[in-house]
Every structure is written in structure tokens, then in C-alpha cells.
Length: 640
Image 1 (cartoon, rainbow, N blue to C red):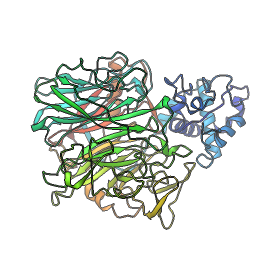
Image 2: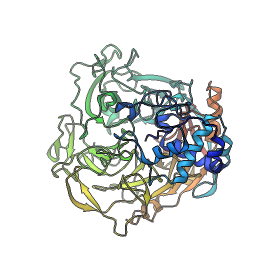
Image 3: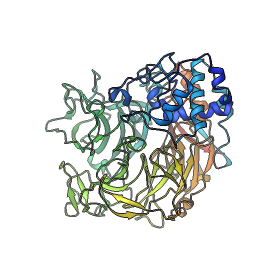
Image 4: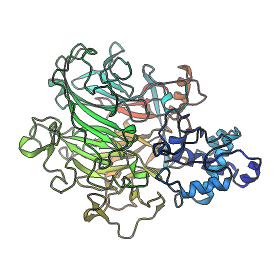
């Protein structure tokens, strides 16, 4: 969202904000700015261009973007009342929404007070540190001990304090199927590594970044926008140990003059690109301005000599999805781990697709997550291998994958056949729980990043609607993102497009959640139901974390399942686990040459410095913490 704030420093500064200049008012203003403004205007109100890249809707619509919100002069007035009016009423042409109803008048004044404090270099970091304690949920006194496992090669830009300043952007670690002595690790900037556990050696298996002279495969590859861009995911075929097939998911610039989307033929000697062709992109109903078009690409790789550290084989493009925004793309790919040959679920892939930021914007794209005529804010279900389920599936429009015939909206005119569930902001990670008593009926869990109130964990079922952006967690949401109680009878229309609906549905609700508040967090990471041996007290518990703060919680899986009762007030209790992950990350960041006094990035709850936590699981069920800020992987080795 864009908050355009007039920041002429005035001699009346101390008078105009004196009533708001308490520690709590500044803290609230800082948190609101970090949540709603910093993505476009920079973490220090330096303006979009000075924040590192120009993503402002103002300039996209032909307007003038303030070069620096703390400059003496800018476009929309100089007094506090001018600023107040702009924030409250917004700007025309969808440059910026009105925050009336989302922010109270007091909150608007606190945002102004906070940005004014930046203008006079007032340090509010001590305020933040004093008022971000009091953890959400109870704490059972359990502490996780972490052991350094692997220092990833430095791929970030340590010269700044934004998210791109992280040391390395490793996000996923997976043991190689059939060989638990090797693990594969991605870095969003392009490399897919192999880690040999015996020799402790890390080698680059593939590098997807072939842009702008980089020595990788794809000329249109991009990780430059930060956040979930670049090589965002990879997953092994259920029979990888026999056939060498795996899948990658990466982002490309759709518009790149003179560049092809076909991988380079001279980068990986063993890669045969003969016959590699691109697919037609799956488009949103409203195609975005070409200046900002991004596409997510799923590629199927067949390595004919698995076991060594190089690739020899072929690649095939499976799917290309165009995004209507730069945030919250297609993030996740996962197979059902219990499916066997002959089962309906065999080789069926579930995809977690974010809303691309549409749900927080005004205008015709706002309800994409609710509409069935697009792919945003959805869980999709496809069969990437064309030879599977021929009699019980439909060939996709691009002819590169199949769609199961039991998908819920396959026969609904106007709906996308791939949709399995919908109404989510960003279900960026999925995991399965397999009940030993019901091994053929696993439960799919989604970790869904929220906007205003809650970070949620959801149980995904066929045809379910999780309500966003009309609902978030157990709250209703208005068109200006104001939150309120649920209606007595909570029913939503089944929207096929912006003008066509058919029937109605009761929304599904989270089974666990934590708030955007001190003690809570900013963005849920991911998690796993613990199956290892090192942490016996957490057996059969769902362990998950928060990306920015680095907080880690657990919840008993039985209580998670019991909360799936269609009652919005029923959520599983969560319990915080003590870790020293933030201090470890800060110390390592400084040791590796980080130039900021804190970790890169920021969050409304985390304040300055994002831990940037992700959780991984090995083949024995043990857990690892990946932290991008310091570029480290640590193993969870003990609980006390």
C-alpha cells in the first residue's frame, strides 16, 4: 500500500505532534508505517526510488513520486493537516487507497509523528525494544538448542539494511530421496546446491540466474525485487531415486528486450536443451502494465546420472503463471507423501499461490482471491507428468500437465479447473500430517500470511473458501481493510468473476493463529509435525515460526485437528519455544561483515532487523533453521 506523507519540516514540529510524541504513540506509528508504507516508501521514508527500486503506483499512473518523504518540500502539502487529509482520503487514480476506517484519527497522527521523528533523526529504537516483549500464548519454559550446521555462500547485498541486504537467501533444505547423506538447498538468487554431509562440501548443482551477464541458465530470471523472487522452490518426484525427475519454481521478467526464455545451451554441459520450448502464460483477468509483469515458471528436470554433483539430462517447461503484482507469487509445490502407484493422489502436485498483493488494493483486482476466474490466492491441484492418470484427468490449456477430474470446479463455467481451495492471501508453504491410524487420509496444512490481524494455519479441503479479502482469520474485513466481527450467519457468495456468482459458501476458518502484535509476529514462516528423535517432548507437535521476529511456537497436532470444527472461535492453543536465534543471527551477521547495526530489513512487530527464518526437515524428521539475515543453517539438536 502507498501512504504518501507530506514531510516539510516545520518550526511548528514540536507543537504539532507534542500530544502524540509518547513512546507508545511513536511505536504505533512506526509499526503502522512499517506494515503499510515501507514497502513502497522505504524503511526510513526515503521514497520508493531511494528505497532501491521504483514500485510506486503513483509513477505507474503518470504522477510524481515524492523523492524523499523527509525532504523539506514535496507534492501534497506541508502541514500536518495536509498530510492527515492525504492519508485519510487517499489519492485518485488508484495511486493510494483511503485509510479512513482502517486507521483511526489517532493512528494517522501517530504515523505523522513517527515520520516527523525521522526527519529530525530522533532515535526510537529504544522505544521499540522496550515495548516488544510479552509473548503470545503461554510459554512452557522449553528451550531449543541450536548447532551451526552450514554457512551458505554470500549472495546478498550486505551494503544496505533492506531485505536485499541479507547475507544469503537460502530458503529450503531437502534430503535427497534414497540418499540421506546428501541434501539439496536453494538460494533465491539462483543457485541450487548439493551438500555432501560426509565431506561437508557444498557444490552448485544448477544456477538458474542467467540474467544480465550472470553465468546461469535463464536469461529472464529475476531475483532483484527481493522477497519471494528468484529460485523460490524445488521438489523431488515421488520416484526421483529411480528416474531422477525433480521440479523447480522460479520467477522471470516477462518483458525483457531481446532475451529468450529458453535456457542457455552452454552453461550446463550435460543439459540438452534441444526441444525445450516455453509455454503460453496463464494470465490474470486484467493483464498488468508491461513494466511490472512477472511470471512464475515450473520446470521439470530429468537427471540421467543421479548420485554425482553435476546435471546430465533434459528439462521441460510445465507451467508459466503471470502475476498481477510483484508480491506473493506462486511459492509452493508439494506431493502427497502417502500416495502409491495406482492411487488417485499418485504424482498429484499441490501448488500454493499468493494473491500478488491484490487483496489489499482498491479497484477491480481486489477480489481476485475470492474469484474463481483467476489463480491468485489459491491452492491449485495438477498432475505435472503427462503420462499419469490419463483416464481420470483433463489436459491443461497449455498441453503440458493434467488436471484431475475430481477437482471441485472442473465443470463450473468460467472457473479455473486447477483450483482446489481459495480465498487466501499467501499460502506460501504447505505441509502434510499423516495420522498413523489413518495413513491413507493425510491432512494438508497451509501457512498463510495475513495482512491486518492474524497469521494463520489452515487445514486445506476440497473446495474450501478461506474468505480473504472479505475475511481474515476470525474477523471480517471491509473494502478499506478495516476489521470487524463476523456476521451472525457467515455466508459468502461463490464469485466466478467480478460480475457473476453462483450459489454461496460458508467460509473455512484457521485452526491456529497468532496476531500482529507485540509477542506475535509479522509473517508466518512454515513448519512441520515433528517426527524425529532429538526432541521427544515435541513428538506429534506442529512446530512453526515467524519470519521476521524469529519466534518459534508449537501446537499439539490433536488440538490442531480438534479446532477444525467450523467454529471461528475455536483455535488450537500455541506455546512459544525459547531460542536464541535472533542473537545468534545478529552476531553472525556482524562477523560476516554486515554493515548495519542490526539485521537487514524490518517488520511492524519485529522492528528494525528481520531474522528471516525458515524451517526445514530432514529424512529422519529432525529440524533445521535457515536464517537469511546471516546466511546460516542451524540444526535443532536438543530441547531442555
